Length: 331
Ligand code: AQP
Image (tube, rainbow, N blue to C red; front, side):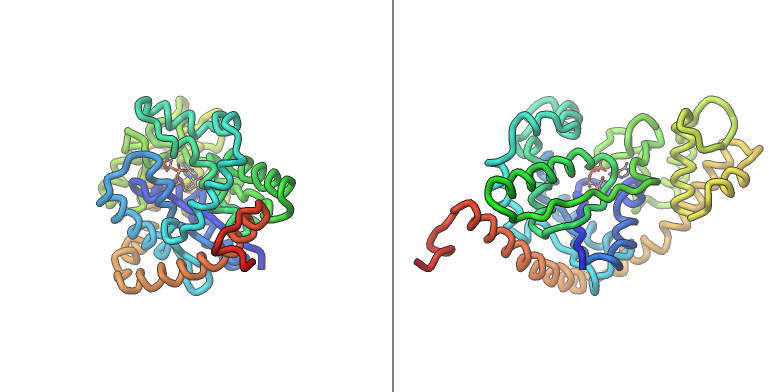
């Protein structure tokens, strides 16, 4: 069975963008692929985090994975820091990565701009850690949102470079970027992607928002000039709202457009808020119902399976590079 790997950061709160662009597709793909879903807490610390909050968010994100429908009977769910090979392989790949290619990464440019003082070396190195995550599992396909496309290209480049210099060691992965929902935009600024770390929280609908917050955020959502409710790329705000509606209801575009023909923006927003609240209700109940022991069991099981595969890949990479020591040779 072919493999997929993906992850999300336990930073802030998971939002509709993360769900519609990534997690939702994991749920479908897990039936076709051997699946590894990681909570990438080592990526999270590339930006300063409160230790207590980070620990809580790590476990909350594991609950969210389960509640959206990741089935631990068929998929492996684990925490990145539980598998030390991720950090080890990062060091190896750091020695192949070029400063110039990391400097070109738009996520680094955006995030370092927001954080103009004390930008960490870890933030610069984020794509190398991500490449390690993916390559350790000999991953075929990586389901991500559009914002991760450039990091995926880097992963492919570095895997190809390693294989060329040291022999075939890593599978070169393909991205899986959905045709619809790959970039859900902020409700308060449709030129920016919906993002956990956005200073303006009103643009971002969190999966754990209560109905009041959902209603308030959609009510305040900015719209375009004009009155027609149609999918149209020259009207990004309305198209963004319609895309969310389309993905949450599963209705075809023509049906949605005829449903809102002759109606006003306020009605679209209210309808979308209702659909979202209905979608979130059972999901939030599920999150609350996942007990600590059950979660520990799943994460321990995930850790063991992940360590086994990651350990084999890392040992092969070390051997290919001539990195030997007391634990790697019996001479
Ligand atoms: N707005 C988005 N639309 C579609 N997909 C998105 N993703 C993120 N934002 C959108 C996808 O969600 C997955 C998990 O994202 P992440 O936790 O790794 O962090 P990120 O990509 O950096 O997303 P955020 O929300 O903007 O987090 P912060 O603010 O902490 O950096 C990924 O597959 C991502 O593509």
